[in-house]
Length: 309
Image (cartoon, rainbow, N blue to C red):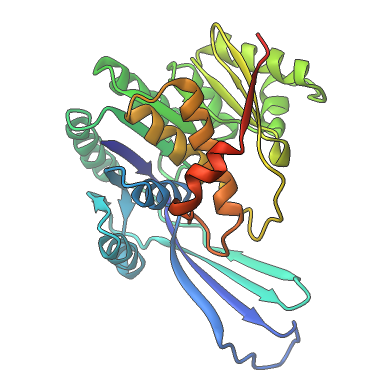
């Protein structure tokens, strides 16, 4: 079973309108409310792959209850730590000409007692799962090295840890030796302070991150696939050309594929194909964090993998 950590979830509200006009009442018939957050996207895709998962994190207020209900509707197990403040809401207004305005609430501040309760639940979780996924940003009140602490606790129990974070949070997390990280080119440049332009640049930057502590590094090449760097091997993954419908959430879907393959003890090549197939499948769907599980095997068959070293 996979444990999935989402510390800063949100209710994502999307409204499609004709155009942006001031001093005008916009009447909207196309709108949606979804349980948002990178970890929740991972959980939805893992659920579609029929992989058992349990979600942990922080929820509060009406928005928190909404997220819990949405997960329950999908039969996704969850044991969130309830907090005093309200879970954040993220609002998107999208016009027909594709102009977009986003309003992001600052979100809750997590109290010390709430952090203690979460850690207690996390330690219990480590006895139930063989893999942890932690995705997304940290809410206020949580120190930058929080993922670092969780990774060390997981390592003590020999539970593998996938970290999908950015900035200082990623840098601090790497120091605790996570099993897998999934930075993009921009994050590689930020951490290494070097320009990333070629495959060799990506390989060298990935090795720098491995020297800092990461055991495996998966770097998205966008529509060109992925580069996977481990201690002994380097693989280049090539995905089929597609017409993308919605690329949002594809990285989270890829993480779900990795987590599922690792949890099932798939061979590396099969895991790489599953992870990338999930990312491709998500881009073909309108919704975020959704795949067509019936077509996953066909997509996997169309993915080629070249061993570079």
